[in-house]
Image (cartoon, rainbow over the protein chains, first blue to last red):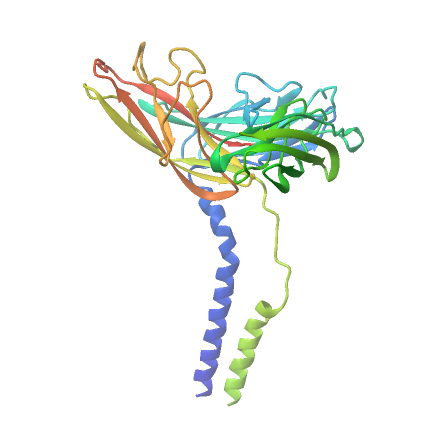
Length: 262
Length: 158
């Protein structure tokens, strides 16, 4: 009897221990799944302080089961008025070099690629994209799919050289119905890509509304249409918007703009 | 009785680590990962007008706040061949088109690469890209066609 109960206790303990091992193993499962059949880059944002010779590295992993011909280029961004960016595939990023621009990556292999800032632009920062293309070495008839990963390169100005300057342009009403919104043209005249956010207070003949502005990163020198808030439900008429824009935790600009809802 | 107490004590010992407060955590490196299935097709087209479909399945993992999946011609960046299946010098009249889900098809010969889908941070998100090739009434496809498609996973913020 004593032995049987001891054995039962031991079995329960063993079961609990096994359960704990299973829980401890669980977090590694997505990693294994993510490593099946793809091209990956880590980190997705390579960020360091801008100075001559500043460098970082990105690791490119081929888990496709096929040999890939990989090309890596540093590219400038193009930023649309919506704020979205895309790598400009017809240009390379000035002053930035990549240690290996063309190589073959065997199935299951990984390679680290160095990215160096050789020349710091006069504004004290440089931003761009790391454009990685992985092409299967054997071309087939019909459709051939090619992998393309675009990650961010951020060479930020040193803390003493950071400049936060914003300029506001016109306020405009965009969209219609439930998607009608107020946007403000904002140009980044500083040298960082710190997100621009803030608050807005709208008042006028048809009512009022206030809210926080969803933050957006704006490239130095670029202008975007910053969405201030939705206008659905506000009646036709003349309105005034008091906008405070903030960046890096401080209010940087306050403006008032008038607009009409037609 | 003694054995029951012993078994109970063992149970308590096993349960103790779960009850104790332990800091659990770690850092996850930021990453972008794109998986694509080995889609094949569109090497030839039957004679006569019609629409032909091909599905490319992708799976994406991204730690970025916003990421975008887009598709572009991987052979050329401009000109007559942009977005069109080619058999040597001969081109199909209509460009390839692509879409995700029930969104409208977008031609691959546009100036701006069609954006197919956008995501927040995702892990192993499945994306089905549908390709369409239309063949016109007066068209006679001949030979073996090829096209490289560049499927891009990109951050949307600088």
